[in-house]
Amino acid sequence: MSGLAAVVVGLSGGVDSSVAIASLKQQGYPVVGLTLWLMKGKGQCCSEGLVDAARLCEELGVAHHIVDSREIFEKYIVDYLVSGYASGITPLPCSQCNRMVKFGPMLAYSRAELGIDTIATGHYAQVRYNPNSDRYELWRAVDRHKDQSYFLYDLPQEILAHVLFPLGSQTKDQTRALAAQYGLHTATKPDSQDLCLIEAHGSMRQFLEQYLPPTPGEVVDLSGRVLGHHQGIHHYTIGQRKGLGIAAAEPLYVVALDRVHNRVIVGDRASAVRGECTVARVNWVSIAPPQYPLKVEVQIRYRTPAVPVTVLPTADPEQVKLVFADPQFGVTPGQAAVWYEGDRLLGGGIIQPVAEDETTSNGLGSR
Ligand SMILES: Nc1ncnc2c1ncn2[C@@H]1O[C@H](COP(=O)(O)OP(=O)(O)OP(=O)(O)O)[C@@H](O)[C@H]1O
Image (cartoon, rainbow, N blue to C red; front, side, top):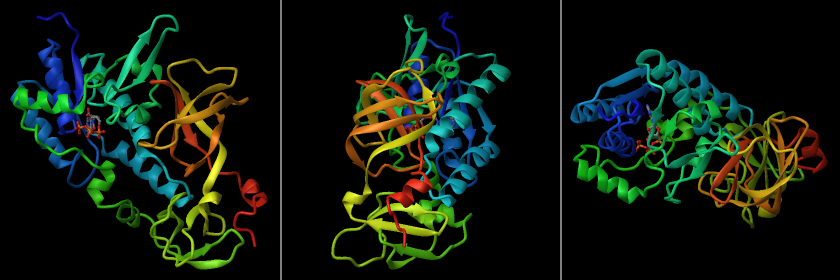
């Protein structure tokens, strides 16, 4: 007996979670594999992932549990995406999935069914307990290219206190080398390239077409001049340039999605930048909600560099205002804004649409 407390490891059937469980076992932790069955259909998180995860656990000689989570996935992710796109935002499913579908339910299941109080995943991020603040802090992964802390900003302290990320302090190359060294059958599996939903359905357009009928409308410029037509604002995102189907002398970008008039509003690149935005549903991670403005760095999309910003608290503790040091392109309602001090993730939330009155006073698409 190692004396280490048991850990339940979330397994997707991919190489990262395979190495996460194998490494923990190697370190002497009693481990159990747990796979959430998330979607109807094939691919990761569906039949293929389930079978790979089961086979892995057999190879490692550890127990494997499968929990049918299709209903909560449908409720928290599919409905969230469909209603979000229909309302003209570009929702980010991954952080919501981590909180509502993966970490929360995995910990609840582990406690209730297995009496185990710690869970682990193959995410590239680091959790550190700070005894001075008595908070569990989130830090970027050592492998900056693989860092997934952005998707984890919404995890509450109650969950972070019970989570291990065994891969956070190593590179992806080291993970692959370990997979080969442990002789895991998943060692050569390619990395997932996209959102699980896109991998399962081909594209976001194909996924949405199952739920949202075509709603034809106009594509207009900032003065309201009709430049073309679209089949539904849900097929567009702020900052999008390709696929507008409009011939113009200069490149045009989606500047706003006007749900009320069912219009896509386009303009030049300069009109697609914003100096500030409101962020709601804020979760403070590594620090308590501050009473004062913070000068830090913010990431407004996964895989975009963090840029200097001032985070201004508002009267509502779950809402802040961000003022960018330099106006930013592609500030997209529905995506997460996540702010960091160096490599330490302080907090994050969801970028809100420009208020309708503001849109009008800006003259966006008014006739
Ligand atoms: N269906 C699932 N059931 C349980 N845990 C999951 C599931 N899907 C993902 N996870 C956990 O979340 C982690 C990150 O998932 P993500 O979809 O980002 O996969 P990834 O980075 O490609 O990792 P992997 O190589 O393990 O698939 C995984 O390493 C795994 O621990």
